[in-house]
Structures are given as structure tokens and as C-alpha cells.
Image 1 (cartoon, rainbow, N blue to C red):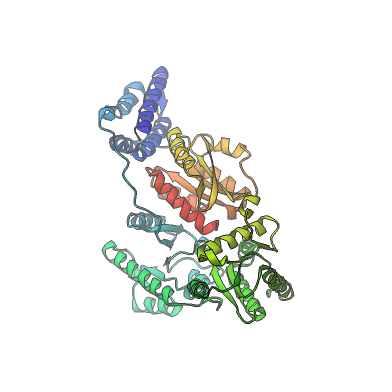
Image 2 (spheres, helix red, strand yellow):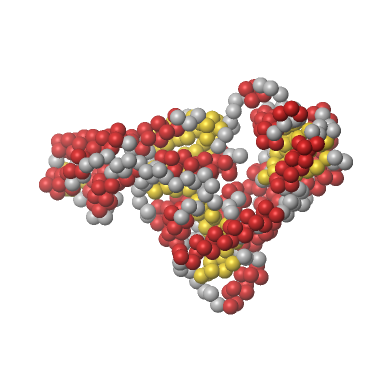
Length: 525
């Protein structure tokens, strides 16, 4: 950390020397300087410099054209230097986000969602934000949050309430939906409960009441999940039942094949026809699979659009034949809109002397991945060396920030971690938005996580975000905005234009990486 603190002071001194030559600078230049110093200083533990820069920003305009003379601007910059001789602050250990539950907040009041985000994340939760009903529904299906906080007065989608678009899946998954309202009368509460909401609470939120309430609801959800053995949406057996049955097979030293199935282009079905059609597709797959399976063959919903079939006393050839039968059956029975379902599958067979459920699932997953990378709509048997026969999934971590220190800190951290969320990491950085946009950075079939600084020369983060969302498919690109300001207008604009998240400088690199990993595990799995 001392290395980066020295770099901050070196940058301040170089800027001072450069501006000394001209003597005059515009107010907007001084604003940008303090903005960058604030974000970096806080990140590397320079509290005094951070606070001084924050104070100066309050007196400056981002777009100010006033010409400032040396006698005016120089004392402001020199204020940053005296703390150089103070002891270097150590980077404290961040709170782990590994198990932080996702809480989705859907509200068109940007000040409120910014407040709730900070409140949640200060208390160990991870907030997902949506300022429109459409974005909220999309994030609900994509990220599968543990709990939803929904403003009851959000504008309707196609004449129906936002809640009606997520109610069926929320109920089937036991996901609590909490409606928020400014009116707390009896009629409002009755309406909320009749719609199927778990709770109706009023604004403002009081932390001392809200967090015990939140913990209570999540604990109840966990108890329901742990006691259930059936997937409510599809009727298939669930993950808990899967591991119970695999334990029995392990104790019996039974012979069986495990098939991991994944619906092809499922996200495209959701995006094109709506999530209700996606749910219909899941149910159709389960119904047709169970109608085909015989004695000793069981179907489980593993998660999302992934399913597992266990076939006792069956070898991989028999498993492959059964999957081909299922493909033919699905071709003959399309969805109501005519769409035909397809799927890819990976088959793994346990070695009796070293059978571990997690290891067997990993082998099936490798075979499934191979099937998807080689054209989909096929079944692949696991074999030794299969993982080396196809390039592992690659995620490109791309930082676009004019702050060299931020770029270098993230680069150093990522270079020590060859994988994130089960994918090979490739790191790149750009000093401004124009350099990024002009580069040939996108490669089909890879994954991307973009960290965009909100304020940059040439093209700022918002311009880059707009270009990315208008040009490239969004299902393989996650975008998080980096900002040193808690500007409600800036946050709202970024979320409306398609940002998946935003992080306020100063930040700790390990926290950023943990947050990125959790988002990638949900979207890129």
C-alpha cells in the first residue's frame, strides 16, 4: 500500500509542477484533479488527503469555466501535501462478501435506493438496484435474489403491476417480496397481502427495525428451503433430494450414470418471449423427461435451466440413447408459441472406489461444457483429459479508468488470481474510454466484466456504457461503474442505461473482486 501512497503524492507534485508553468487553469480542470485524488486516496488509505479533496470538491463546479490564477489554486493543492510524513495506514481486512445474500431493490426514487444500497452493504448484504419495473423483473430472473424490496407504486408493465410479473416464481421459489409504500392504511395492507406479498412496510425505513425484520425473513426462507424436497415451479425433485439420493447410492455401492442437462439458448427464450414463457419451457422439459424415464431413473432440478438425470444400472451408452430419445420427443412437442426446446448434456459414471458426489458432478459439468463449446444439442461422456481438450471459459476483466494507480492496483490483484468464478481471468486496462472503444476488445463466446470510471477525458464512463450496451450482446457482459461521487443523478443514469452495479470510491480491491465473483457466478454460470 505504501507504494501506491507514494504514487499519489508523486502525481500531486507532477500536477503542481505542470500547472506552475502555465499559471492559470480552468475550474473544471481543478475539479477533475480533486475528483481523481479523492477516489484514489481513499482507496489506498490516505484519510487526510481524501477528506481534504472531498472538502474542496464541494466548492468547485464540474463544468466551471472560471479561470483561476496561481494564487488561488496553488494553496488548495499544497493542502494535500503536509500529511506525507504521517505513518502509512495499513489496508484493513474487508468483511467477506462470499456469503452476502443478494437483496433486490426495485424503486424509482434514486435517493432512496442509493440510501438502501449503502445501508444494506454496510450491514453485510449485497444490493442489486433497479429503477424501472422492466429492469427489476429482468434482474429478478437473472440474479435470483434472496429477497425483493419493491415500491408498491412503481409504474405498471403492460397494464400489470411489477409484482404480478414476478409473483409466480417468487412464490414457487419461496422468495420473500416486501412491498414498500408511503401509505400504511388498512386497505393498502389488505391489497398487498391479497396480491401475495409476504410483507408490507412503510417508508421511511428504520435500521433498528429493518435489519431484525430482514434477518427473520431470510431465516424463515432458509428453513422452508431446507425442509423441501421438490422444486415448486416444475415439480421435479430438487437439489436437496438429489444429494440425499446420491448418498443412498453411495452407501449401496450402486452402479449408475449421472446426466447433467442444460437447456440451449434458454436466456434467449426469456429475453424474446418473456419469463413466463421461460417458466413454461422449464415445466415442459420436466413433463416430457418424466414421461420418458423408466424405473430407476429420476429427474432433479439442479438450478436455473440445469437438470440432472440419474439412471441406475445404466452405462453411458444407455444414458446417451435416453437423451437422444428425449431430444426427439421435445422436437415433436414445442411450446405453445412454436419454439422447440433443445438441450446439451454431460454424462459421468462413478468409479466405485473413489465416488464423491461433488467430484462426479464436476466431471458431468466438464462434459456438458465440452458439449456446449462444440455446437450444443449433443451428449458428451466424461473422459480423462476432457478438460484439457477444450479451452476453459475465459472472463476478461477490463478496467477503464484514467487513474493509473487504480488500474495498477487492480492489475496486480488480478494477476495473482488465475481464475474467478471458475473461469480463466484475462486482465486488460485502458486510460480512457476512447482507447477502449477503438480497440478490438470483444471476442465472441468469451465473458466480460467491465469496470468503468464515471469521469474520464475524451469519453466518460456513461458514454462507454451506452456504446457497449448498444453494440454488444449483454448476456456475456457485466458492467459496474466506479465513481467517487454519490451523485443520485449519475447513479440513476448509469442504472437506466444498463449498468449492473456501481461501486463508490474509495474501495478495497479484495471487496471489488469478491463482489465481481458473486455477480459472475449468478450470470455466467
